[in-house]
Length: 416
Ligand code: LLP
Image (cartoon, rainbow, N blue to C red; front, top):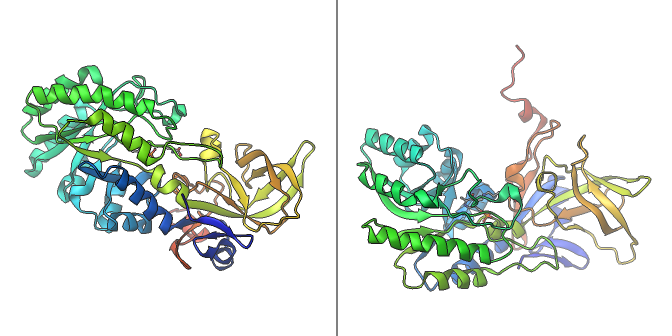
């Protein structure tokens, strides 16, 4: 459920017409609905209400401070993967006991910063990382809380670039080596084992891979507890998919919770979850203006002022995003078109061979489901300033990140 709807033929975010925002801030821009973000978090929490749990929103999905602030104020924790994300969590005053630190390549500086600030746990991905954390914690006179991220070798049946729980992926500690590494960790003087973690991939549209993964790690949790190792937190990562097409059905957080909880019965742990996309994905759109409509020999191209540098998911994963006009025109004819950007690459598209109402120069369109992995993955390719980000609340909106300027693009560069 989201709050992007047509009112009298005009696409609105909550009660604000997107055209009004376009007039005020220019295009392209990302627009997030605060009510949708809050709603998605509430639905997730409700789904797991029957057990002890902590929702740690995965900051990588959308790390804008206004987004983080809203979620943290509503009680979410955060899943971070870098010193930059740690600083963002600190900026919105996320309590340390609600921060989990994931990622395969934590640098010494990042480990130090997290220990200095405090956190619920590091999700440790290798023995080498464990040793490094133990050493740094020792130097700082601290005890580092850790979970080991276990790779359960389960096929998440999603895009290969966003599968992480297979044996061939770089992530986690192999299931078969888990007990050994836990035993080593247990002897380290500056490590306190607090949990077990596992994340198998992103945009999962089926529940069985989650269930397979939980089954595999549940056995391990029981084995660890039998061996006297203290597992208080079970972190099952993120990964719940969202519908990118109107007709697409993905499991609701309630069904996802039901599937997980039935596998966890009788286990005395606090469940940690790290949803990113399920919270932010359908809470945002990218709004662009049509620059040109070009009739090619085979099809029409709708050329917009947003490009793959602003939203790279189609170029990177051939991801499908629904594209809709901001102003409905019932009498407009439809035709098949590609919606593309101005960048010098054929991968620069948002939609291919899509049946769309005919559009004209100056029209606005919205690329849906752009709230997660949209702005955060944008770049300045082709020396394009990144778009503004706007948040809507009710009938009000605010710019939560200014559009970059051409001057800002060159800041820090020097002629040698
Ligand atoms: N936890 C860990 C350890 C992760 O690696 C990820 C995502 C998440 C949580 C959040 O997953 P989510 O609930 O959002 O599926 N750029 C790609 C997605 C990459 C996801 C990477 N890890 C995309 O645009 O589809």
